[in-house]
Length: 127
Image (cartoon, rainbow, N blue to C red; front, side):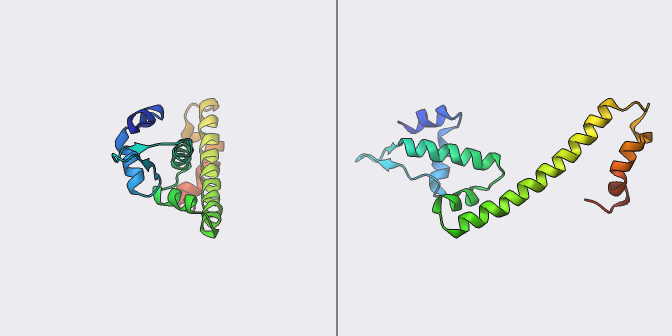
């Protein structure tokens, strides 16, 4: 498969795949003429790179995942903890938004529930 066809199948521009190759994330085979030849394994790697990006991993962190070893496991654990923290923050934000959408008070600034939730933020004790 050509670089253009492969990139298009993922909704990417070809220069993205070249950049990922320069960063050590992709290592396509080459023809005698120097043209890249992509395999099914390359498609899997691209899928994993995209998933890593969605999970908030940098390209360097994603490259580390491909190298294996204990660094990979440590990275997964540390990033998993960060994702859990971000999920908790997002869930708290969702609770505020959902409450504000259904709040019976005329103005959210007088809603006892929102004042309770945002109290630590207003006092500067929670970030």
